[in-house]
Length: 55
Image (tube, rainbow, N blue to C red; front, side):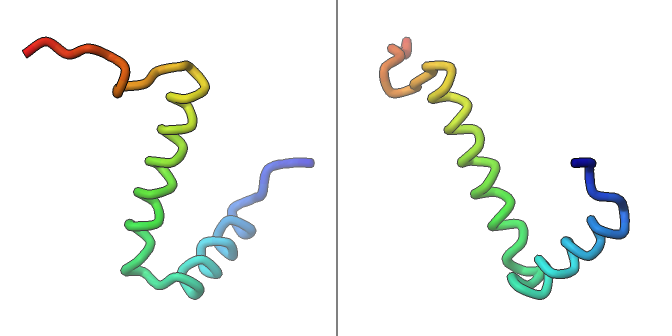
């Protein structure tokens, strides 16, 4: 299976815009990024809650 070309990516972007609207896209992108970041942290074993911080 190959990567989608520019035409397919354009259609996907258009469908996403129609479904969610332009105003909600940044919010969706931020939550998706936060979720991926948390997933990567948990896979590496990084947990900010268990680290001790110096004041």
